[in-house]
Image (spheres, rainbow over the protein chains, first blue to last red):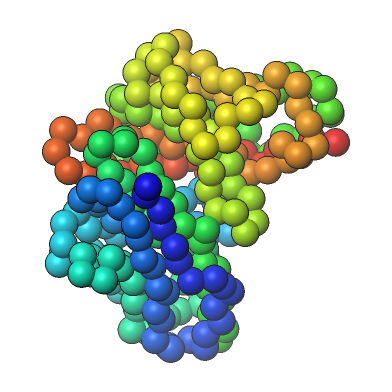
Length: 112
Length: 115
């Protein structure tokens, strides 16, 4: 079956530090992969996505590359800001099932 | 921009009450979803609908029902609320994709407390 596993949080970093949040997946077909972000008190917002192997999604300084060989979609940012503090969810969508599979979320705390 | 709205941000109900959570999207999306979000468990799919009057059970449908009478509106119903249904409820919508991808758009969430 399909599933998404992401690193447990919370992750605490100082401002301007490098961020990596690991995400690996299991899928029966050829999924699309997503990162969503949830700021305190809000719903989820799409951060970036990639639809096929070797695609790189990017937005707001965040990047993730779809790696089929390692079934991974790790989220990275070169220099985090306090305003990046949020919960980050990795997700996959597979056409045959027409539903999303979400990871459990990773909370990021960025300290000034 | 796609807009998904939910009828309440915060709701407090008593055990045994019937509770309605409403969700409306304005982009003519085919699919609509209800999730609950609990600490350490991430998002869990309760029900989804891919067309008017159609519904499919998700991973945790017990204790819930849904209604989709119009394309833009998807309601989640707790027939008899219980304390273990205290949670954040998130509605989402997506356009049916004919090819290879789809994106879900989320509402702001309703934090339900059942006393």
